[in-house]
Amino acid sequence: MTTYPAHLDPELIERLVDSGGGALPHKMGIEFLELSAEHSVARMPVEGNTQVIGLLHGGAHVVLGESLGSISSAIHAGPGRIAMGIEINATHSRAVTSGYVVATCTALSLGRTLATHEIVVRDEEGNRLSTVRMTNILKDRAE
Image 1 (spheres, rainbow, N blue to C red):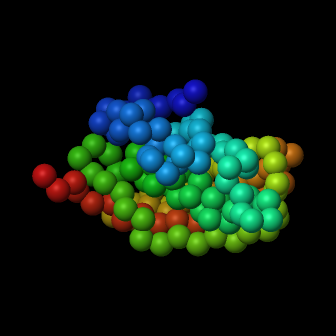
Image 2: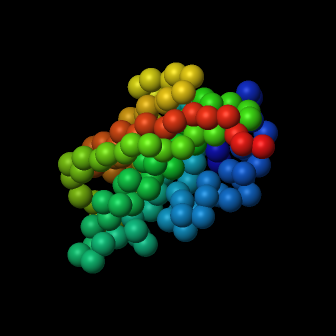
């Protein structure tokens, strides 16, 4: 079950609940466990998200990281504003073939126009699998 901070934009909560975090994260089985601008956590099954030789797909790591970084940035942006990714990179350090992975998103910089997060993806034993860094631009929502 996801915990939402009290100050979270009600419209953002509604979009998260209605979409499961978006069509792609929903299809990939991503579950959001904690959400805030400073610290967010999600998990994702390996099964269904593997590449041809059975390893968790590197792109799945990035989708998990970008989902957390984008939502955390949108929370920071606040009501009437949006977050859009402008840069993302990932370093994969280790492979996994089963179970779940857990991603922890930590804010590196939360400004008025930019938000940068580091997302660390780990296996169930706590081994670091990948490190994702993402920057979002924060803008007023067009009416």
